[in-house]
Image 1 (cartoon, rainbow, N blue to C red):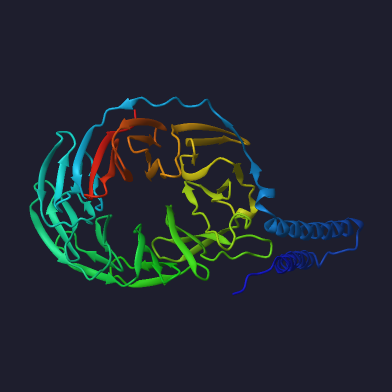
Image 2: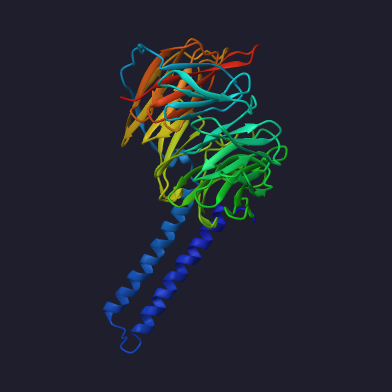
Amino acid sequence: MPPVSTARKRKLVQRFLLWINERDFRYRYMRNRESRKASPTRIALALIALTIGFLGVVCAQRTVVAQGAQMTERAVTVSVVDAPETPRLPLQKLLDTISSVSPDSTPLLDQSDVYAVSAGAQIVRHDVRTKRNDWKASGATPFSHVVASTDRVYVIGPNATVVARNKKSGAFLWTRRVSSSGNLRLSLIRGMLFVEGDDVTRLDPITGAVLWRAQTGRVGKLVAPGLVFASIARGEPIQESISIIDTASGEILNYNPGMPSGIAQIVGIRGTDVLVHVSATSTTIDEDGYALTRIVWLNSATGHFVKNWPYRPDAASHGPDTGIATPIVDGANVAFQSGDSIYVYGLDAAPASQRPLRFDGAGDLIAFRRGQLYTRTDDGLYAIRSEGKRATRRQVLPYHYDPSLNLPALVQTEDTIAVSDGSTIEVLDLVTNKARQYSAACQDLFRVLRSGTLVALQCQNSAATQTGVIYVVRVGG
């Protein structure tokens, strides 16, 4: 369906309001038809009703025009004031170091235990408290992905297999070959074990039996709050869609809420709904000079469409050759970058009815947690908290960015951000908003894991030997 022009929208709203006004007039007429008299009072009331109807049409016109107005004109610009500069953090002691780790594997931090794949392709359980390996066993690959339940640990094995072992002893339980291809990943969600590759396979976590296989295409992200929702990438240029899969049968309900050559990214779960960011890879510009994008609500139990939440980043910053920044959802609010500005909206109201908060020149948005924006600049990581039209920007991780070396490297997880300049690692706890610095050689920091107050940081220290290291630290407090 072609996009509806602003003029067309205005006419539709006018007709709707006139229809409402006419229906209201007819209702009043029929209700009083027996006793209606042409008294001055009734004539005055009729004139008032007509005046209200006219004002409604004018307001509707102004509303439609406002929907096409530039975001920068409607936004409330927040004045950002810098707090005093943060002094260099004192060096803290590492809790543990695990050497000779495969840098291409994805380890697991489970309470005080780290399950990792060694450079020799062995699965290892390491106890952070004792700083010793509890057990190690063969059956992994350098690219293995590790997940665990309460009593089992699962790892990707050779030749597209999944291997299960006893979590405490490392004893072999079962192995299962799957038909998926590509780099395989494992997900364990609400007791369900999934293998993700060029399709999705669900295995019985107890026996390893294949329950179903859904031929979806390459899986980007998978969530399963009710049904299974998987973001799928296909083609060149890449086109994304959302596949909704029945949890019990594996039946696919394809849903593409996007536009031509669309982007469809799962950005969060809110209540009973899965939120999907939708835009176009070759950004569509509307008649007012805006890029078109939206957030779509899908019911997690049925997969049915719930509602659209369309918003329009300024096309001056997001033209046909520039991708739309992925929105970051934080509770009832959403933030996204548009050029040098960051916008914050409420999710409970339509964007066209809001005046979003706008933060200019605050840096690159990397996180939005507990009402705080976290931005990155050349001289550090900042936390921004607004109070009305005024906000305080506080440096939480001081550093100097070297674009020639692309350092420091930055990685993050749900409640943790870590940066490394090669010789030190700084870790910011988003729960307490406190940062700590550790002396640790890390040529390439590329993964951070968290379990409670423990954080595991995975680095590659030798590109020639393809060996890595995992540093474990404690945050909070």
